[in-house]
Amino acid sequence: MRFAKLGIAALAIMLLAVAVPSNAAEKLVYKQGIFGKVTSGGNFWVNCGYVTITPPADGVVVVTVSGMALFDSTLSDLSLTINTVSAKRGPWVFGVTPGYQLVQNYSIRRVFTVQANKTTKFYLNGSSLNGPGRKIQIQTGSITAEFFDSSDAQQLSAPAVLQTEKSDDARSNE
Image (cartoon, rainbow, N blue to C red; front, side):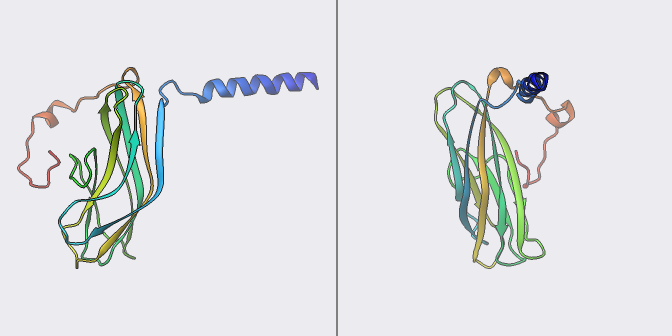
């Protein structure tokens, strides 16, 4: 019986040592159950939710937003972006169109550099170019902001081919 207890204790210690990755987020904040509305065809950006974080050191924050959009018609569309400014387009835009039952899931992520002890809000902003002018409901299951110290993060560069090409396409995220 005594050996069984020692074996269980040793197994628990080994599992704890293995379960903690070295690059785990140093700080995590999140919000759940946020509801926003975007006017279809309105062509203006609206704040649909936000999360606030104060990082303990210089580093990066990975912001992830996931949820569901309920559309007013099949003619509608929805653009979502994560930005540090409320109701403004961010550098990357995620497009969502209605599904068969006018409902579509979404999940978007963006990385931001942050400064130590500087409180930052990260906003989920939405806009619609097309539709009959009724409300598209944005249900955000969660918005999370995960902070990683600069020593835990490495910037990866794009291949040279992608860095030199320029696009005249108006839909470009540049």
